[in-house]
Length: 209
Ligand SMILES: [Zn+2]
Image 1 (cartoon, rainbow, N blue to C red):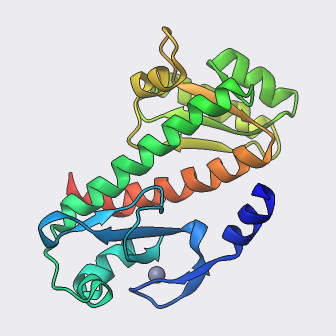
Image 2 (cartoon, rainbow, N blue to C red; image 1 turned 60 degrees about the vertical axis):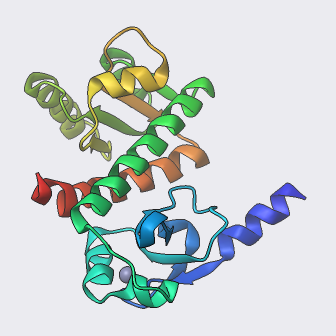
């Protein structure tokens, strides 16, 4: 029963209120009307309220604000602080990714620590190596050299996310600036979200700071 429902959910499509493109709801951002006629980002896309959707990028969120598309979608004039909304989207998504790090770690599909991550990559068991935003230049260079020596190794920088936050998400006591994501359907989805999130960071958050 559960499997059937998930399959059905995966097929649901929604229209972006900014560019009007129709996409699978799973890869869109959902919003609901927040308190005091504001817009609230619905990170789990499950809030029991009328939702409006945008593509998973800052361009469409900004365009939706500019076109006043949220007010039109909610049939109510809403007030939006664009910078605050963008920051809120990013922080909520980052939290969601970090909590999935914890889950995937428990499943044995996330290997923390630089040495172990490299070992997994060399054994061809990884989909990607993810690095914290504050990883030292030296470590980054070292990983870059390994990437060049290995065909197709995917190296992803988790923009905006610090070693301390990764450490906490995994419940570790040791600082964690590098993790390997092993091959699996759940890690594939996570990497896809991480890639979206990185571009979102570049488009939205860096320009606010
Ligand atoms: Zn769009």
